[in-house]
Image (cartoon, rainbow, N blue to C red; front, side, top):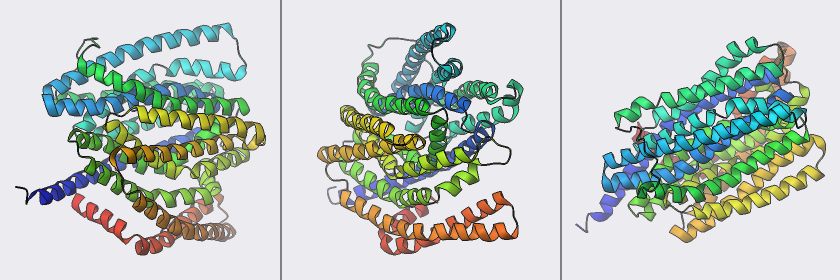
Length: 541
């Protein structure tokens, strides 16, 4: 039996990695469609609202339900629930795990409903008093409409966590697609019925988001019922499993909360700086979220249940191996994406958001481009952060991300104040973006250090080696794409005169040239990493 153990372990590792890459492909495909639709919805928002006060007010109001979604939905609750749910299923069986899921859902719904009722009451009274400037009065009515969205989206996120633990990724990963489709429909069919000004039309988007939350929860119910997960109407929080989730959730909520509260502070500071600043940051973030969601977020979604099962088996070697493979594969993709967003920021923003007769004007283009260039630096650290954090949550270590988060947020807040006070008015929002990047980079360093002390080296030298090789290829790519884009754009403008067509074609030509310029050195420098990805792609097929 001892003789066969190394071969059994090797075979199991290949199976685990094959399942990981297969699940990642499913989530990545759905996330890709969601991000493309999300970009389409932002194009519609740019056309109808530009960087107007109505758009910035909507962005600030939408931060609040999203804050709770990340805390009580896909963030802290999922991070606390998935390890306990996986452990309960392994030790006590599926029926007991399903009962735990039903009880957790009812308890979450009750708590969130009370929070929403209190929030709507406070916002209504505040709005009735009329205290506050015009910018505040633009936010409060939108916030009142969208606050109930957090009940449905948090329950939808909990449903996603349950289904992911059951190795179902297709339907949960499709829920953001529903949001974007409803959002686009609201822009096309609903907003024009609310009026002819941005301040009136923005209410159509707010009501559309509330409807989308209901639908995101509803589409997951049939699959939950098929697995035997049903609501258990009991508010007994003294259940040892519920208490375990709450004990894990508290530190996780604090750890994620500091980042999310800091995100809210960023938006409020931007909103205070200028009425266009919050909208410009949101447009730049949407362009960052496309590659971030397509690769890092989708991979992190799969890693949490994968790490949780490995932690339940007390197999730290598998955690190290999985993290190393995932990180090295991811760096080959996000490093060139970051460089591309940096050097092609202006043509990218122009192609997507500048349209004839739209409200996204030249100044909107300038402000969004500045924010995107600083956010581009952070694509690598944002991605790494998303992969490191699930390892701690899977091992039920919620305190370390809290401590790291508090340090990072303190640094971020100090940098925010410094940049807002010292940078010119037209660049202050870019300073807020840069502060976010620096704080996330510090967080990755601290998380990696703590993880090394917990499970040993996860192949950090090989990770940095792969990142460095990717950076060499991306630097060569960056020297190629800029002249290709500018020369193709000039040539097409002189021949056809269609500005949008010339911009789009030149950007596509630059991307194609960049792929070739990046692939040549990477295929030579990163043969091992490319071979690993190809092996997993073949096994998935």
